[in-house]
Image 1 (cartoon, rainbow, N blue to C red):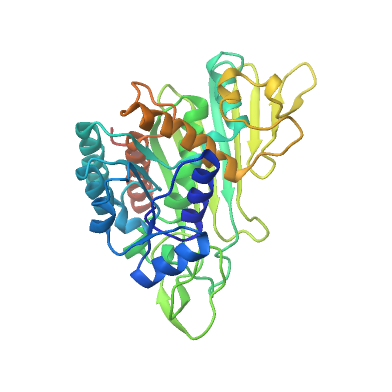
Image 2: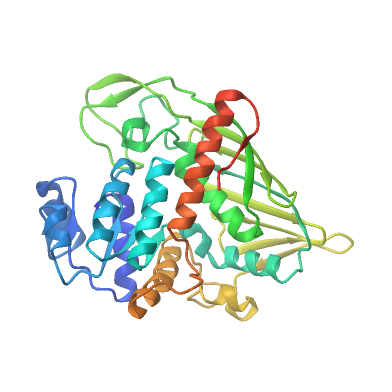
Length: 373
C-alpha cells in the first residue's frame, strides 16, 4: 500500500476482509510510514518505493498517494511487473494517463482505477435494468455530488494545492466518481461538456503542517491563493443524443458526501443516493412508482455479485471497496486481466482525465468543448 491516509486505510480494511495478505505500507516519509503501520496493525513499513518494488512477495500495489505522484509511481510499479490499483485521478495530465494505459496493456498486468461507487449493489442494479431494456432509451442523466468539508476559508487539505491535486478539484475529486458512475449505469459515453467553475474562496488560510482528509486545521496559518473550483455546474452531451446535468460542490453546508444519480428513460426512471444506499427509486407513468430495498433475492445477477448481506442489513461505503477488489483479485489470481473486466481499468481513468481536459477548455471559453477519444 502506497499512502497511509484516510483512503489508504479504507483500502487496507477491504483487503483484510477479503483475506488478502498485506506485505507492508509506504508512507510519505520513513517516520510517517512506521507510525501509520503501527496504528493500522501492519507488520512492515517500507523505507522507499525501490524497497517496496524489490520485494518479490508483493504481487499487487495499491496507490493512494497525492494525485501528482500517481503517474510516476504507477509507471514504476508496471515496470516492476506488478499489478496495480490506483486511486483517481489516474494522472493529472492526459499525456501521462495515455502513457500509463499503454504501458499497462503492453505489460499484460491487471490495472484498476478505484471508482468504487460502481459497486454499490443498487448502482449495479440500475445498470442491469438499463441493459435489459426495462428503462427504455436513456434520455436524461442528472444529479449532484455535494460535500461541506471545505466550506470555510480555514478548511485545508493538500487537494487545495493545484501543484499537488491537479488543475481540477471538485470535478477531479468527486465529479469523476459521478461521471464514471453515470456512464457505467447509463451505458452512454460523454461526448462534450459545458462547464461553469466557481472558486468561492479565492484565498484560504493554510496551516503550517499537513491536514488529513476531512480533518480540521489547527495552529498558525498562512494565506494561500486558490486556483481550483469549489463549485461546478456541468451540462453534458452523450454520444447518441442523451443529455446530462450535474452539480458539484465541496461547500454545501450539511452535505457530507451526498451523491445523487437519476436516469430517465423512455419507459421508466431510476434514482439512487449513496447516503441511503440500499434504496432504489423506480419511476413509472400510469402506475405508482416504487421504492425497492436491497434484497439479494430481488436483485439482478449483476447486482448480486456486489452484495454480501441479507436484506435489512445495510451495506455501504466500505463494502464497495470489498466488492471492487473481489473482482480485481479474481483477475490477479488468474495472472492477467480478463477480456472484459467488470471493474474500472486505466482506460476508464484516462476517460475521466480527458473529460477533465474538456471541462477546463469549456470553462475557459464559455462554450461547449468536445471530449477527446
